[in-house]
Structure formats: structure tokens, C-alpha cells
Image (cartoon, rainbow over all chains, first blue to last red; front, side, top):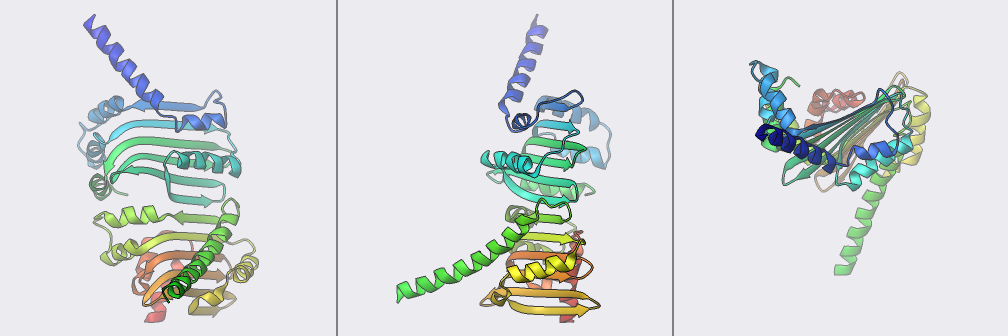
Length: 163
Length: 169
């Protein structure tokens, strides 16, 4: 009984955490999800458990992940296939993020590909990181990370990793 | 007298922002054009990177990044001369001081700067030839160090910044 209550509590808290974010949800206003599309919300506890398991293997990548473990609060991934977003729709999506307090960090367009990195910062900590990648008509990928990465942690992460 | 000074300051700052606005409008015009490669790095990104103590980063580059408020790069190899002429017509280059002009086998490279006192507030690069490049740096720019930044950026068009170094040598 105790175990059932515990599992239910964890599941409910994860579900309520997922329901709080509306950032990538707003993308579905522009396009309904179709079979094959992915909209995945990974709660923080699941990320931490996953990273804990991976971190058992000691190498450069796992050391980097280990340092991220406490800073990643939630991840949301959306992969939409065969989606040709018009520049107007793309602009509308990006302005919705900006209305939500995001700021442009980097924008790159090269031919059909369009990459945008937006960040929401609070007290010198990256609270949200949204990366959108549009590949013309092939695929649209959006990643939304809810984090608590300080500049020191980011510095450590970059210095320790290969990129 | 105070009002006069204030007026002059306001007019001068309006002139600068109007020109920057013209460049961003030109940039935005081709933001969605698939024939162009477009890069925009925001002041926030520069501010963030300059605050980080990154092992691989040259101290000169770090000092330079602290002053930069934004970077815009627009390049295309489709009809480059047309866009070069269009940009030359649209931008009021008389507001800038010409830093360097290179003409070599059909390639035109122009560097302009806008400065106030001893500080360079804007660096504009226009290239016309086999490709069209428009590069605009805004902020406090140290020309002695900007060529080092070219080496750290793997961005098409940024290699022209190396010319500033060779010109100084």
C-alpha cells in the first residue's frame, strides 16, 4: 500500500510539473500533432535518475553529465516531421517565446536550416533554454530545458567538455 | 546652453541609432531569404560568454567580447554584385569613416568605422565579388584585437576581418 501511494505521489508530481510548462505546448497551436510526431516531457527526477545511471561509467562525457545533474530541472522535446513552417509562423512562434520572457541569444539561417537559441535568465542563472531547429520541409525540432545553471556551472561544463 | 548641448547629443545619438536601424532593417529584409546565410549573435550572448572563464579563450578575444554589443552577418553567393550595390545605396556610408578599401580581381572589400572620441562604436564590412558579405559589429571595438576574433569564429564571412590585421602590419 505504502509503495502504491509513493508511486502515485511521484507520478502525480511529475504530471503536475509537466503541466506547468506551456512553452512548447504553444507550438501545437500552430500545428496539430500527427502520428510519428514526438512531444516528450521528461521530469527532473527522471533526468537525474538517468544521469545517475550513466555517471557510473567514468569518462569525459559522464563527468560533464554528472555536473549537470542538479542543474537540469526538466526537459521537453518536440520533433515534428514533414513540417514546412513559413517564416511568418516561425516568427510568430519565436515572438511567443519572447513574450514569455525569453531573449534571443543566437540566430543562424543557412539555406533551409534555421537555428534559434533563446534563453530566460534570472539572477545570473539560466532558467530556461530553448533551441529550435527547422530543416525546411523535413523536420522541426524544439528542445526546452528548464535549468538552474549558474555561470560558474556553465563555465565548468564548457571547460570540461570537448565543445 | 545646457539645452543646446542636450539637443546636439540627442541629434547625434539619433543619427547613430538611425544608421544601426538601417542596417538591422536591411538584415531583417533577408533574414528569411533562403539564398542568404544569416547569423545574429545578441548582446546577451556576448555578455554571457565574456563573463565565463573559458580555458581555450584568448585573453584579447575575451576583452574584445566584453565590449561587443551585437554581431550581424549576411552572406550570399547568388548575385553578389547586385546586393553589394544595393547595400552601398541603402547605407549612408558618409556617416562612417573609411578604414580600409581593397579592390582585387573584381572583389571589393570595404571596412567602415563609426567612432566617438577614441572609441570605435561600430564596424561595418561590405564585400562584393564572388560573394556578398555584410558584417556589422556594434559596441566598443578594439581594432587591434578584432582580427584575433576572426580566427576564433568559424563563420562564413568573418575571415575578411583578418584583413585588418594584415593592413596594420
